[in-house]
Length: 436
Ligand code: EPZ
View 1 (cartoon, rainbow, N blue to C red):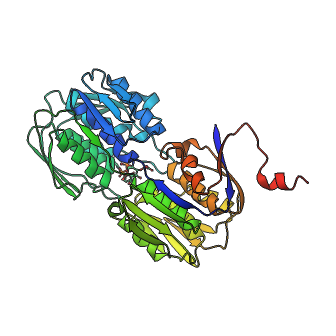
View 2 (cartoon, protein in one colour):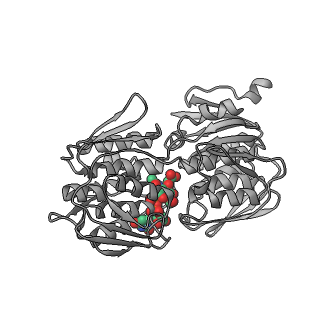
View 3 (cartoon, rainbow, N blue to C red):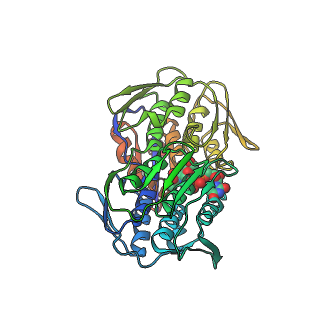
């Protein structure tokens, strides 16, 4: 298994280009099965989650290929095995987003029920409620969700809000299914994330009739059939936000290209509040910091609120800020596996109920740490860039799920991230310097 050995502190300078969005690509890949024929998607990043999704679609009967120019093509002429196997679904929870398209296309779907993960219990009750409102008969059988609609789905007015507000993939699942339902569907309390809007735009390109895109009220007029298309996904705003945090924590200056600031307003607002400069520039922005980091409070919320997927990375910034900060995650209240690991790096964080109290420290120190989930591992890498000495990040496979070859993109900017095999022990720089 790979680990990262990271030497710090460093300063990052230069230009980095953001990849296409993982969280757009996954539901858009699933949506391609709504139309018989070959769909081609550009900008899909080369990540382990994308490869798992490709494997899942192949299992359904699709032909999935990475073209020479990097595009991903999905030929869904044949979808004759509407089953999402446990062995695949357990590796990626987002597999659930084939449920809606499969019921709509095949009248039947059998998907392994996703389990919990490091960031929370993560039920799919709202997905199932929405699909049964469209007329699907749903039952649980030996750990599998079985959904059937032999006579097709029927449009309806559906409230899709949940205990933590809207659901991103839940909205996607119901919206995809409704495109081929008879009549009109209205989704109230729909998620407004840019990735949901990207999926809706993709569906409309395929011939769907969706309006209210980007708002909490989506209206879908069902159509008889959809057709395959060529489409380009939006840039990954969470990757962009992570690079912004890396520039800020190292007091460097980064030009972040292919970055849509309009999708990151809550993040940019907070960065400016804590003393970071974010200037629009070309197809992105320039992020820099010369003064001290300032404390602030963050409450994560569904879009357009502050994204939970940047909560951990921001916590590393606030760990080095002047003063006390508070972070509350209103979307995944238990998403704090990184707290103990950052404290191992000499941060001063205290979990109090749903909140983390952060007392800013002057510096972080390198240490061996354990990645627990995708964004927590990104936070540990960001922290290690500013920490004094050597940090060993274990279980790097978490970060490979959402960031393509991150060390090859940050090292040219001044980072010192070395990917190594955990079994090949290398002598950290500190010890090499002082063999005694
Ligand atoms: C998407 O997950 C993203 N994943 C997550 O990013 C992201 O953290 C999340 O949205 C919130 O922004 C993908 O797009 C692949 P939700 P999703 O349904 O759709 C509760 C990353 O790091 N809920 O919006 O699964 C749920 O438990 C990943 O890239 C129910 O109670 O999240 C949570 O507390 C991690 N019942 C809240 O709603 C349901 O049926 C929001 O979850 C569904 C959700």
